[in-house]
Length: 304
Image (cartoon, rainbow, N blue to C red; front, side, top):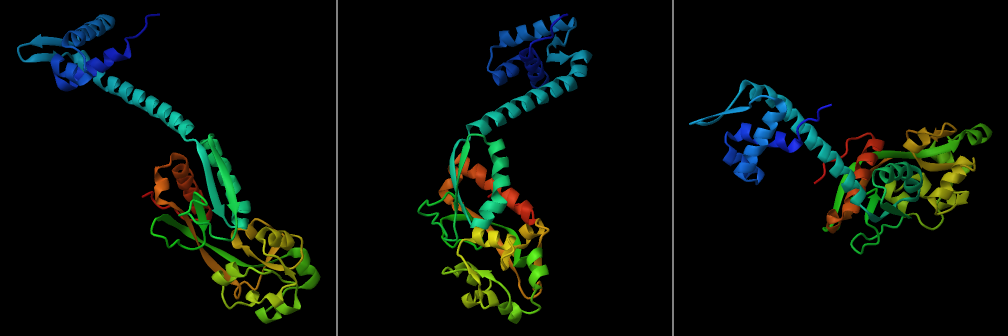
Protein backbone atom coordinates (compact mmCIF):
# COMPACT_ATOMS: atom_id res chain seq x y z
CA UNK A 1 0.00 0.00 0.00
CA UNK A 2 1.35 3.42 -0.98
CA UNK A 3 1.34 5.95 1.84
CA UNK A 4 -0.22 9.34 1.13
CA UNK A 5 1.58 12.66 1.20
CA UNK A 6 2.63 14.16 4.50
CA UNK A 7 0.18 16.71 5.90
CA UNK A 8 2.71 19.54 5.69
CA UNK A 9 2.75 19.10 1.89
CA UNK A 10 -1.00 19.76 1.80
CA UNK A 11 -0.50 22.82 4.01
CA UNK A 12 2.05 24.17 1.54
CA UNK A 13 -0.27 23.44 -1.41
CA UNK A 14 -3.15 25.29 0.32
CA UNK A 15 -0.97 28.32 1.06
CA UNK A 16 0.27 28.52 -2.55
CA UNK A 17 -3.30 28.19 -3.85
CA UNK A 18 -4.55 30.95 -1.58
CA UNK A 19 -1.61 33.34 -1.92
CA UNK A 20 -0.60 32.70 -5.54
CA UNK A 21 3.19 32.51 -5.14
CA UNK A 22 5.94 30.50 -3.52
CA UNK A 23 7.38 33.55 -1.80
CA UNK A 24 4.07 34.57 -0.20
CA UNK A 25 3.47 31.00 0.97
CA UNK A 26 6.99 30.90 2.41
CA UNK A 27 6.31 34.04 4.46
CA UNK A 28 2.97 32.69 5.71
CA UNK A 29 4.44 29.33 6.74
CA UNK A 30 7.74 30.82 7.93
CA UNK A 31 9.74 28.61 5.59
CA UNK A 32 12.22 29.40 2.83
CA UNK A 33 11.07 29.71 -0.76
CA UNK A 34 13.23 26.74 -1.89
CA UNK A 35 11.59 24.59 0.80
CA UNK A 36 8.13 25.58 -0.45
CA UNK A 37 9.24 24.67 -3.98
CA UNK A 38 10.46 21.26 -2.84
CA UNK A 39 7.16 20.63 -1.04
CA UNK A 40 5.19 21.29 -4.23
CA UNK A 41 7.50 19.10 -6.28
CA UNK A 42 7.22 16.27 -3.76
CA UNK A 43 3.43 16.50 -3.74
CA UNK A 44 3.31 16.49 -7.54
CA UNK A 45 5.58 13.42 -7.55
CA UNK A 46 3.33 11.53 -5.13
CA UNK A 47 0.18 12.51 -7.06
CA UNK A 48 1.81 11.79 -10.43
CA UNK A 49 0.59 15.01 -11.97
CA UNK A 50 1.48 18.71 -12.05
CA UNK A 51 -0.35 21.10 -9.75
CA UNK A 52 1.01 24.40 -11.05
CA UNK A 53 2.53 25.77 -14.23
CA UNK A 54 5.05 28.58 -14.17
CA UNK A 55 4.49 31.69 -16.23
CA UNK A 56 5.52 35.33 -16.31
CA UNK A 57 2.46 36.07 -14.21
CA UNK A 58 3.54 33.55 -11.55
CA UNK A 59 2.09 30.16 -10.65
CA UNK A 60 -1.07 29.07 -12.44
CA UNK A 61 -3.03 26.22 -10.81
CA UNK A 62 -3.83 23.26 -13.08
CA UNK A 63 -7.34 21.78 -13.25
CA UNK A 64 -6.15 19.09 -10.80
CA UNK A 65 -5.05 21.76 -8.31
CA UNK A 66 -8.49 23.39 -8.50
CA UNK A 67 -10.19 20.01 -8.16
CA UNK A 68 -8.25 19.10 -5.01
CA UNK A 69 -8.84 22.42 -3.24
CA UNK A 70 -12.16 21.57 -1.59
CA UNK A 71 -10.89 18.22 -0.33
CA UNK A 72 -7.71 19.77 1.05
CA UNK A 73 -9.78 22.41 2.88
CA UNK A 74 -11.91 19.63 4.39
CA UNK A 75 -8.72 17.97 5.60
CA UNK A 76 -7.55 21.28 7.05
CA UNK A 77 -10.85 21.72 8.92
CA UNK A 78 -10.70 18.17 10.25
CA UNK A 79 -7.13 18.69 11.45
CA UNK A 80 -8.15 21.90 13.23
CA UNK A 81 -11.07 20.11 14.89
CA UNK A 82 -8.72 17.34 15.98
CA UNK A 83 -6.46 19.89 17.67
CA UNK A 84 -9.41 21.66 19.34
CA UNK A 85 -10.66 18.42 20.86
CA UNK A 86 -7.19 17.53 22.13
CA UNK A 87 -6.68 21.02 23.56
CA UNK A 88 -10.12 20.94 25.21
CA UNK A 89 -9.32 17.64 26.92
CA UNK A 90 -5.96 18.97 28.07
CA UNK A 91 -7.60 22.16 29.35
CA UNK A 92 -10.21 20.20 31.32
CA UNK A 93 -7.44 18.07 32.82
CA UNK A 94 -5.49 21.22 33.69
CA UNK A 95 -8.42 22.78 35.61
CA UNK A 96 -7.44 21.63 39.08
CA UNK A 97 -7.90 22.80 42.63
CA UNK A 98 -10.38 22.94 45.51
CA UNK A 99 -13.60 24.95 45.24
CA UNK A 100 -15.59 25.76 48.37
CA UNK A 101 -19.34 26.16 47.88
CA UNK A 102 -21.82 27.46 50.42
CA UNK A 103 -25.56 26.86 50.18
CA UNK A 104 -28.54 26.21 52.41
CA UNK A 105 -28.71 22.80 54.06
CA UNK A 106 -31.58 21.41 52.01
CA UNK A 107 -30.39 22.84 48.69
CA UNK A 108 -26.88 21.56 49.31
CA UNK A 109 -28.02 18.08 50.30
CA UNK A 110 -30.95 17.55 47.93
CA UNK A 111 -30.11 19.55 44.80
CA UNK A 112 -26.36 20.06 44.45
CA UNK A 113 -24.91 16.51 44.69
CA UNK A 114 -26.01 15.26 41.22
CA UNK A 115 -24.71 18.51 39.69
CA UNK A 116 -21.37 18.16 41.45
CA UNK A 117 -21.11 14.57 40.24
CA UNK A 118 -21.45 15.77 36.65
CA UNK A 119 -18.85 18.47 37.23
CA UNK A 120 -16.44 15.93 38.74
CA UNK A 121 -16.80 13.79 35.61
CA UNK A 122 -16.07 16.86 33.46
CA UNK A 123 -13.24 18.19 35.64
CA UNK A 124 -11.74 15.21 37.49
CA UNK A 125 -9.01 17.27 39.14
CA UNK A 126 -11.41 19.59 40.99
CA UNK A 127 -12.24 18.81 44.62
CA UNK A 128 -15.30 20.27 46.34
CA UNK A 129 -15.92 21.55 49.84
CA UNK A 130 -19.55 22.07 50.84
CA UNK A 131 -20.45 24.51 53.61
CA UNK A 132 -24.15 24.03 54.24
CA UNK A 133 -25.53 26.73 56.50
CA UNK A 134 -28.24 29.36 56.73
CA UNK A 135 -25.60 31.93 57.64
CA UNK A 136 -24.45 33.93 54.65
CA UNK A 137 -20.76 33.21 54.33
CA UNK A 138 -18.68 36.27 53.51
CA UNK A 139 -17.33 36.01 49.97
CA UNK A 140 -15.28 39.16 50.47
CA UNK A 141 -13.39 37.46 53.30
CA UNK A 142 -13.11 34.27 51.19
CA UNK A 143 -15.14 32.15 53.61
CA UNK A 144 -16.34 30.45 50.43
CA UNK A 145 -15.51 30.64 46.73
CA UNK A 146 -19.08 30.31 45.43
CA UNK A 147 -22.39 30.96 47.15
CA UNK A 148 -25.88 29.82 46.17
CA UNK A 149 -28.32 32.22 47.81
CA UNK A 150 -31.98 33.19 47.92
CA UNK A 151 -31.28 36.91 47.64
CA UNK A 152 -28.98 39.14 45.62
CA UNK A 153 -25.65 39.93 47.30
CA UNK A 154 -25.20 43.65 47.89
CA UNK A 155 -21.39 43.98 48.00
CA UNK A 156 -19.90 45.85 45.05
CA UNK A 157 -17.03 43.38 44.54
CA UNK A 158 -19.34 40.37 44.14
CA UNK A 159 -20.28 38.92 40.76
CA UNK A 160 -23.82 37.51 40.94
CA UNK A 161 -26.29 35.94 38.51
CA UNK A 162 -29.98 35.44 39.05
CA UNK A 163 -30.82 31.90 37.95
CA UNK A 164 -34.58 31.86 38.45
CA UNK A 165 -37.20 31.31 41.13
CA UNK A 166 -38.62 28.32 42.99
CA UNK A 167 -41.65 27.85 45.19
CA UNK A 168 -41.87 26.68 48.78
CA UNK A 169 -44.94 25.57 50.67
CA UNK A 170 -46.29 23.44 53.50
CA UNK A 171 -46.31 19.65 53.16
CA UNK A 172 -47.19 16.59 55.20
CA UNK A 173 -46.48 12.91 54.80
CA UNK A 174 -49.41 10.96 53.38
CA UNK A 175 -49.47 8.70 56.44
CA UNK A 176 -49.79 11.73 58.72
CA UNK A 177 -52.60 13.16 56.58
CA UNK A 178 -54.47 9.86 56.70
CA UNK A 179 -54.02 9.63 60.46
CA UNK A 180 -54.74 13.25 61.43
CA UNK A 181 -56.31 14.90 58.42
CA UNK A 182 -55.14 18.30 57.13
CA UNK A 183 -56.00 21.90 58.09
CA UNK A 184 -58.36 23.83 55.84
CA UNK A 185 -57.18 27.27 56.99
CA UNK A 186 -54.00 28.72 58.49
CA UNK A 187 -55.85 29.24 61.79
CA UNK A 188 -56.43 25.48 62.04
CA UNK A 189 -52.67 24.78 62.02
CA UNK A 190 -52.73 25.02 65.84
CA UNK A 191 -54.77 21.84 65.93
CA UNK A 192 -52.04 19.89 64.11
CA UNK A 193 -48.38 18.94 64.58
CA UNK A 194 -46.18 21.57 62.95
CA UNK A 195 -42.42 21.36 62.36
CA UNK A 196 -40.51 24.64 62.62
CA UNK A 197 -37.49 26.55 63.85
CA UNK A 198 -36.14 26.59 67.38
CA UNK A 199 -34.11 29.78 67.92
CA UNK A 200 -33.16 30.85 64.39
CA UNK A 201 -36.16 32.31 62.59
CA UNK A 202 -34.15 34.31 60.03
CA UNK A 203 -34.86 32.10 57.03
CA UNK A 204 -38.63 31.96 57.56
CA UNK A 205 -39.00 35.66 58.27
CA UNK A 206 -36.94 36.56 55.20
CA UNK A 207 -39.15 34.44 52.95
CA UNK A 208 -42.61 34.87 54.42
CA UNK A 209 -42.81 37.50 57.18
CA UNK A 210 -46.07 37.64 59.08
CA UNK A 211 -47.26 34.15 58.11
CA UNK A 212 -48.61 31.61 60.58
CA UNK A 213 -45.49 29.50 60.71
CA UNK A 214 -43.32 32.39 61.94
CA UNK A 215 -45.00 31.90 65.34
CA UNK A 216 -42.68 29.61 67.34
CA UNK A 217 -45.43 28.68 69.78
CA UNK A 218 -47.18 26.92 66.91
CA UNK A 219 -44.51 24.24 66.56
CA UNK A 220 -44.61 20.82 68.16
CA UNK A 221 -41.13 19.99 66.88
CA UNK A 222 -38.56 22.79 67.03
CA UNK A 223 -35.18 22.39 65.32
CA UNK A 224 -32.98 24.90 63.49
CA UNK A 225 -31.37 22.33 61.19
CA UNK A 226 -33.30 22.25 57.90
CA UNK A 227 -32.24 18.68 57.10
CA UNK A 228 -33.61 17.54 60.47
CA UNK A 229 -36.87 19.30 59.64
CA UNK A 230 -36.98 17.51 56.29
CA UNK A 231 -36.27 14.15 57.94
CA UNK A 232 -39.07 14.78 60.46
CA UNK A 233 -41.44 15.71 57.65
CA UNK A 234 -40.63 12.52 55.75
CA UNK A 235 -41.05 10.48 58.93
CA UNK A 236 -44.61 11.74 59.35
CA UNK A 237 -43.97 13.84 62.47
CA UNK A 238 -46.07 16.71 61.21
CA UNK A 239 -46.48 19.55 58.72
CA UNK A 240 -43.39 21.39 57.54
CA UNK A 241 -41.93 23.75 54.97
CA UNK A 242 -40.31 22.33 51.82
CA UNK A 243 -39.26 23.26 48.29
CA UNK A 244 -42.04 22.47 45.84
CA UNK A 245 -39.63 20.84 43.36
CA UNK A 246 -38.24 18.50 46.01
CA UNK A 247 -41.70 17.58 47.25
CA UNK A 248 -42.73 16.80 43.66
CA UNK A 249 -40.20 13.94 43.63
CA UNK A 250 -41.58 12.51 46.88
CA UNK A 251 -44.98 10.94 46.13
CA UNK A 252 -45.66 10.38 49.83
CA UNK A 253 -45.63 14.12 50.54
CA UNK A 254 -48.87 16.02 50.01
CA UNK A 255 -49.34 19.81 49.89
CA UNK A 256 -51.03 21.66 52.74
CA UNK A 257 -52.87 24.98 52.36
CA UNK A 258 -51.66 25.38 48.76
CA UNK A 259 -53.28 28.79 48.22
CA UNK A 260 -52.40 30.34 51.57
CA UNK A 261 -48.92 28.91 52.13
CA UNK A 262 -47.04 29.09 48.86
CA UNK A 263 -44.22 31.55 48.27
CA UNK A 264 -41.58 32.01 45.59
CA UNK A 265 -37.89 32.56 46.29
CA UNK A 266 -35.19 33.91 43.98
CA UNK A 267 -32.04 31.87 43.41
CA UNK A 268 -28.66 33.55 42.88
CA UNK A 269 -25.14 32.28 42.40
CA UNK A 270 -22.28 34.55 43.42
CA UNK A 271 -18.49 34.74 43.68
CA UNK A 272 -15.86 37.40 44.36
CA UNK A 273 -14.95 39.24 41.16
CA UNK A 274 -11.30 38.20 41.55
CA UNK A 275 -12.33 34.55 41.23
CA UNK A 276 -13.10 35.04 37.55
CA UNK A 277 -9.36 34.60 37.01
CA UNK A 278 -9.36 31.21 38.79
CA UNK A 279 -9.94 28.37 36.25
CA UNK A 280 -11.45 25.87 38.74
CA UNK A 281 -13.73 28.43 40.42
CA UNK A 282 -14.91 29.84 37.08
CA UNK A 283 -15.51 26.33 35.71
CA UNK A 284 -17.63 25.37 38.73
CA UNK A 285 -19.43 28.74 38.78
CA UNK A 286 -20.45 28.46 35.11
CA UNK A 287 -21.27 24.76 35.39
CA UNK A 288 -23.49 25.21 38.43
CA UNK A 289 -25.18 28.27 36.91
CA UNK A 290 -26.25 26.23 33.87
CA UNK A 291 -27.41 23.25 35.91
CA UNK A 292 -29.28 25.18 38.59
CA UNK A 293 -31.01 27.29 35.94
CA UNK A 294 -32.06 24.10 34.15
CA UNK A 295 -33.32 22.66 37.46
CA UNK A 296 -35.36 25.81 37.97
CA UNK A 297 -36.73 25.50 34.44
CA UNK A 298 -35.07 28.60 33.03
CA UNK A 299 -32.19 29.30 30.69
CA UNK A 300 -28.82 29.97 32.21
CA UNK A 301 -27.64 33.60 31.92
CA UNK A 302 -24.92 34.34 29.43
CA UNK A 303 -21.45 34.54 31.02
CA UNK A 304 -20.18 38.09 31.47
